[in-house]
Length: 347
Image (cartoon, rainbow, N blue to C red; front, side, top):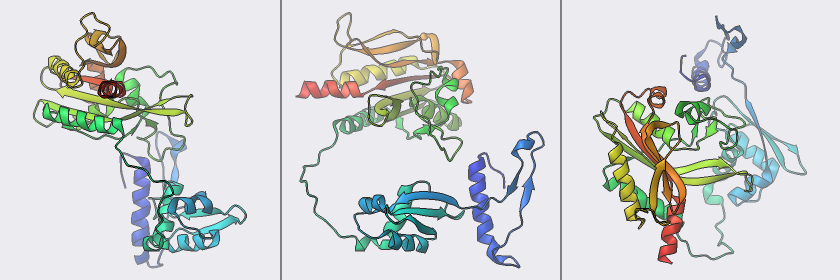
């Protein structure tokens, strides 16, 4: 079994071995194999590694999320029916110890265990309750604004893409020539996949990976994404905060900087933000110091004197790091300020 990702290869190997072990001369038995690395002896290991993964959760948490009220002992029986052997480790707190076998690689968090309890209990058996608080539903302003921006960029000829919120350390720092000061990015404490170790702080790397995988498509390639990025923030309860960003990219035989700049102007006009022209109000451009972009072909984007993003021609080293051979131009802006500005105009 070969793969580009060790974790995924291990999951596939365990699944295949578990499936075919029933046909062995001694059913459900398997012989182990020692894998030796010629240049890295410290990585030598015995496969398959079919041990169970232990999870701990509480009956109170599961009951509150599903909307039921059952004892921890009954919950353990339901989980065992779902091929998740479970036992009560503390009757006072209702703490459960759950073992996820190698055939249940879909179990990653306690919320996955909660879902299996709900399935075993039966969705139709969950009592329907009228909420104690009556409210009128309304779309969040930032989500409504994001939908309008998606429509605007689609009408401009750009195709929307959705990329993963998780990435590697190199993709958001070294590959785009940004220094890691250990103050911005959220890293995962226990990543299950080598390629998903940090939460993105920019949408740009995701679009660059999309361009790299689409190199055979006819040029120009025009793509965009409107999604959240995450930053460390000690002032919040969780220690991190979300920001809604918009990123657009143009890839062709020529850089296409003028096309990205005209797209920026279209975005600003649609939101009632005119060119500042020396005035304190409006949007303007100034020379940027971002190493992600080509020197002399990069600019910070300002609205009412505040920097909201950057545009420019991507540096050749950045493109090379992602395996892109054609020149690209891009812009990325924080649209939360624009949303607030539009709301204030309408109110």
